[in-house]
Length: 164
Image (cartoon, rainbow, N blue to C red; front, side, top):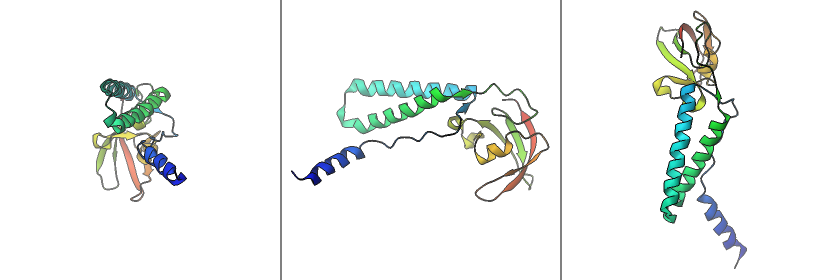
């Protein structure tokens, strides 16, 4: 048998393996709600893996490989989680606070600074290390901060800070 066929077989086997999810180099700060979400996700994935394993269905190896990859990722995120105290201060923006701000045109927006895995922009949950999160972190009511966006920088004013 030619070496070329052996290498093709190895390459075909490697394509079945899912690409590992990259873990952020940022500190894994999470709110108490974010920690609960991570715990739930790990438990759900473990349950699905157990179900797949019990089936013993070799035809769905790709699904099991994907579940296993996701379980490893979220397990690592859970182990590295650093829970931040519930944001009770409203003097300066911190992780967990709800922040209302306005742009130069008076358009108001309300967001909560949360950990990376909890972020969901559609629900106003913004990663603390995102450009918006970094602009708001440490600001006080009345401060104007520069939000460095790919679409262009925008000056925003902090209007209110609420406990998380």
